[in-house]
Length: 96
Image (cartoon, rainbow, N blue to C red; front, side):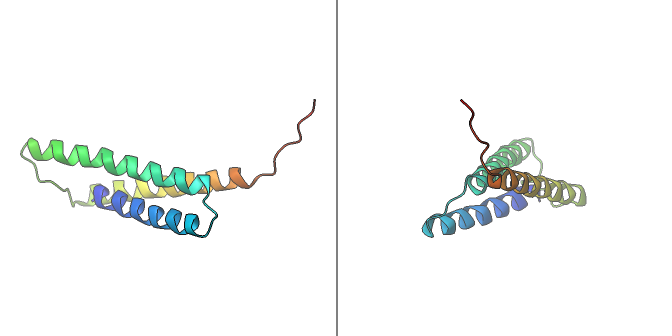
């Protein structure tokens, strides 16, 4: 289930980034979060394929895997919020 959740989060952030880019206002935090979720989705894809090669089901739809997916998405959203706050801080004055 965490694989499906990370792919969904990656697709949502990709759509948001594409929309922001179309409007001419792409943001670094949005792009970073998109890459983080795609990285997580790729990692879980490799894990799912490895499990399948060991004879287990391709996707684990159990309760524990769902909780893990929720934690992954929540941490990604917190990271995005932190990056967004850091990105909006005014630049410090440079002293020569």
